[in-house]
Image (cartoon, rainbow, N blue to C red; front, side, top):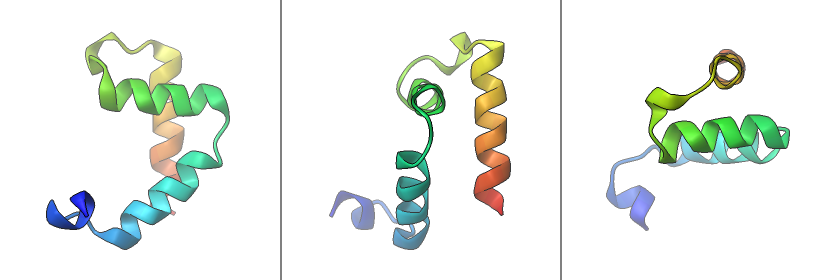
Length: 59
């Protein structure tokens, strides 16, 4: 698969995928915006959601 080919840890990827899919739509939109669009145009609210995501994902 593309994930295995690029050296991504499969367990970490599955954890992220499950977490991402369980989040509210606004938080998912902020994460997608960070990953796919120009991350320099994120609003303060987007950054707040991303900080919350990072804090919860590290747990």
